[in-house]
Image 1 (cartoon, rainbow, N blue to C red):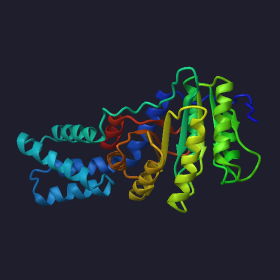
Image 2: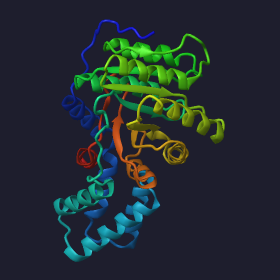
Image 3: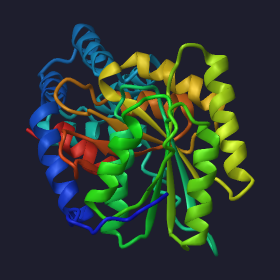
Image 4: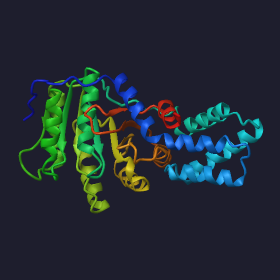
Length: 318
């Protein structure tokens, strides 16, 4: 049964999150921007310097194709403009990085549905912070005055339902779960959506299992959860949670999940000092799906909407 305890915390509004995340990103990632600017501001940018620029971008997990494109465009612009002015070079680099991240992509969350709750499925392998992300996202939605219900459909990990219930209860959001260990995930997901319809909630968020022993198991499980939910309601958003620190491994995980369910957005967690910012470009390029949210740090409100310009400015802060 879903029970909503009394709300005890007020989640931080979006504006405050963005400012704080930017400050944290500046602190952790500015080596990337600094080294690129230092290389581009030299009196003589010869082949060796371009090789170093390429290497810096690859080390930032940008991926081979985007790196080649960026270097090619920068070379062309530096040659045409002949500018050595650091401010101008910085502006060029900023423009090209923003273009790579693609500010035109729609990064809004599909949390509005006419006459029914919007249904958000959250997927990803175990260990990337998926359940925590569902809890943090519930806080984002509560801060936007939405009525939310959580569905604990990761029934294989013993602590998952308890963990999710705790996150929900802190902001007065009910969690639908099963008392039976190893219960059918699809039926828990269905119950959560049914409860959302009954209570006329705004959003139902379903946490799913992410055991990746083999692709076939995962495909069957997630495919079934989605099909069963769809007997009750459309699925409006499928968010894939990836750990930014896994770099290229995250890309292969992303590929598997996008084959299983139609992923509509990426949540990139742990985008802190040990992560390399270029992974945002690499993942979007591979999946054709936008990064919609980023998480830095362990705090309950350390999840914020992803904004291309804010992100690039933080990377390039001196």
